[in-house]
Length: 178
Image (cartoon, rainbow, N blue to C red; front, side):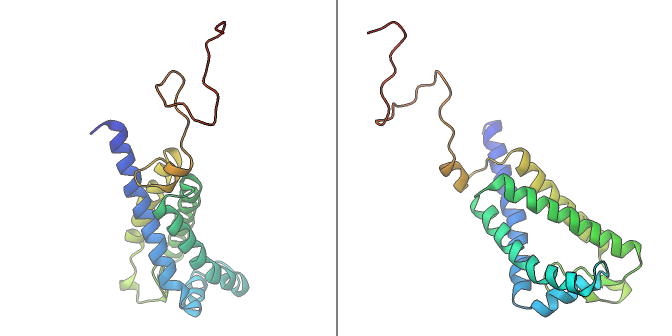
């Protein structure tokens, strides 16, 4: 397998990992708006109105990004937003940990206060860091296997390559030839 093919395969894995996690997280929260809001409130970073808005909008954004990434549509932009979300999640979890809060992150459903022995901040930060890395890879190299982008946004063949002439363009004639 060529180096480019390996990179395309890695892109597919990154797309499916980041997209799958975002899709599952969003689907688990979208049906429970109260629980989603409660998860945001538990971080104690925003007043209730802002937490409510975030709690209601975040699952929809996660679902949309997850679907875009899984099918490979607008991959670079979807991955950039997904990577930024992972950084925001890491910052929120680190903030809760640093302030001594004992909460479940609410990443995959309802979060909120938990027993201090039930927190998993380091594991959550490492997971989100790996997902950030997947998103960063896709920002740098959005091309991957089985992506809709590949079909919709094909690059024209490089100059000098043997590509078939399109029936909608005139055949090229060398300069000076009649």
